[in-house]
Length: 381
Image (cartoon, rainbow, N blue to C red; front, side):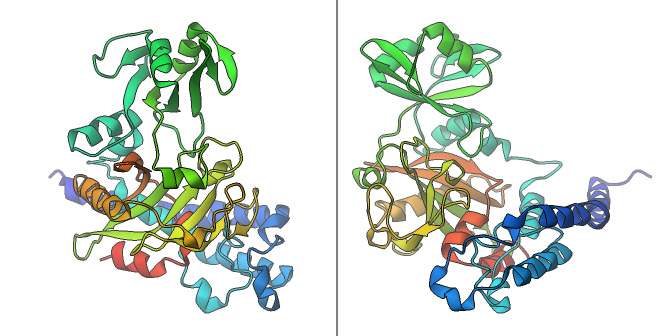
């Protein structure tokens, strides 16, 4: 008698859990101990909270607590200092979600062997088409590349008209269809009749060759709201708004979220590229006091390093509309449990850049505090 699909699914789930447990103890944990011994930055690092110097833990204690993280969760906590664990009590640390259980639970809920709808989010061309179809404003797409060819988004025909489009729009934004963390993004612009990629002159053939090297999406440069531009005009500063469908009530809830802001001459706002992330008061749209860098770029600051705007005095325009549209967009994806939306704000309201089913929890937790309460409430029945 053949097994039902439900029985096979349950058996596969059990086997997956057994495999994870065995691999974690026999392979992952030992390798994490070795990493901890080799990488001193995991237990010796400048504190993000020098104002709590009296509570600062010794390197020896941090090392022991990192060992505890490995034994308990299977991996060292790479965000230990970013979360301020070096000055926090055990009770305060318990309010944070370790990345390992978060990653596993997020993946189990968002990815399904039989109905994986995350492709709508992961492929930026599909995302653009879907957003347009449900009436959500997204970045305007002009071209996309596939199979070594460039196609016009409207006519779906092969074209070499990108030079004319650059001339008309002054500059275009090019990003890989499957890219993450701002990697592979570049800007094409026109100056005195010459095309430039990231400041270097290029011919049309060179540009087409670069675009055909992988699948690219070519879009007009988003015109952001003047207030958002005041923070850092060189980059499009986007809201990472997190939504989750509660397993208990089936409703879509907004979780602690952040605003990402570029710094220096960077044209992207990703913290992985040196940007700063600031927590958002979900009720008012005002930013919280401090912005946080990833460890390799700095610590925390209460003002933007370039514009000198004080974060806690800044309110995101159209924030109620941003929340409403994100909830609506997520409601159209009933098979996806949680999404980290990247949303710009234009003169007329929110502009959806992309949605991420594989969103990260470290940014929201670094800027807003631990999310254990939300994790237990919305990720479990």
